Every structure is written in structure tokens, then in C-alpha cells.
View 1: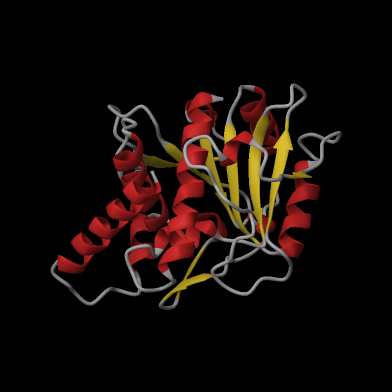
View 2 (view 1 turned 45 degrees about the vertical axis):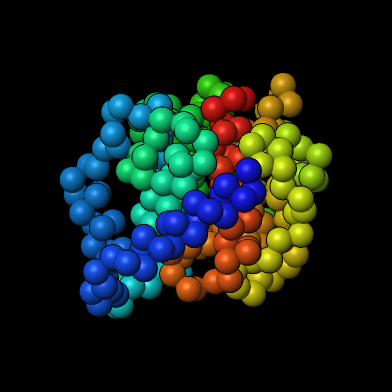
Length: 259
């Protein structure tokens, strides 16, 4: 499967390189985000899997910039991260999805329960209101699975304390390579991964479990795999860590469907 993924990525990059090239607007992601929010963008109804990008209350302005427009933290890497991981996952696994199988969902909305896979970005800026706490708790109690990405050390501990509001008796546990999520589709060889940019501590995969021992959330502490997904079609980062980030992402998608 490793060679198959490498071949698909090579084909993906070749297709990207042969497209007619226009100057990339610095405002592209900001414009897509504004349009999708205004139009209440919905994913295709004929696919069996959809990623929910979760919009939550934040105390920070976000770190991403496009020109002079600041992207809120919850929308960092949107929508390229979703579109790229979904397209490659579709070709690698045969799951009925496509690059448009994603949606923005408010954390305090009942629509969150429609989507078993939730993606959170920059949760170190999260400051949930009471309704958001209630919905996050119910999402996990109903069997939902979530990824939290793009956290440095301080951001992780802020988020860990924020999660105590939903489940006061639970804490994050550092995962090792023995956990099934790292072998659901691809056999991940190591968790000693290289983050896309300098971090404030060692990269860790932190798990959040329910009372039955089910992994309901995985947090990338001191890492930002979504950045690799976003820039896979550009020479932003080296190909080997970008490919490995895709393997992690595909494993997460398959795991959420089978657990």
C-alpha cells in the first residue's frame, strides 16, 4: 500500500503541475471561507463519509494570514487540507467520498451529530460557552470521533483544561505505536514525526478515551499535520513527511468508520 500511495501522490502532483497556472490570490482561502459561511455550504449527499470542520468560540484572532486578512484559528488550512486528504483517501481506499465531502459545523449546533468525524484546528484558542460544552460532550457520548490539530505545548495544556469542562474526570493519555489507529489501514512505522515548522516541545499523539475505553479524540501536540495536507500539491514541505502525514490522515478516516 505504501507504493500505491506514493504513485497516487505522484499522479496528484503531476496533475497539479500541468494545470493552467494563474497568480494565486493571497486572499483565496479567506474568500473561500467567507463564501462557504455565507452560503451555508453543504457536502455532497451521495457520499458515505464527510468531514465536519468545527467552528467554535475563540479568545484569539488566529495565526493564519492571507494578505491583510486574518483567518480564524478554527479555519486554519481550510479548505485545502480537507480537499487534499479526501481526494487521496478516496483513491487509496475506495471509500465513497470525494474532495468536496466536508462541511463547516458550529460546535453549538445539533448538526454536529450528523457527522461522526470532526476536525478541530488551533483549539489552544478555544473558549467554549456552556452550549458548546454540552454539544461536545454529547457528540462523544453518541460515538463521534475527533481530531484536534495545530497545537504547540501551551495550546495543548489550555485545551486539556478546556476539555475538563466537558468531562471533569477524564484526561489525555499519550498514545504509543501499539494503538490500532496507527495500523487501521497503513502500518505507521514510527510516531517520531517531523513537524512542518519549529515547535515548543516534542511531538506527541494524545488520546482521549470514553468510559468504555473507546478512543474518541486524537490530538496532535506540537504538530500540524493539516499543514502537510494543505500544501501537498506545492513545494512547501519535503515529500516524505508530507506523505506520512497523509497516511496518518487516511488511518483516522478509516478508524472513524470502523470504530
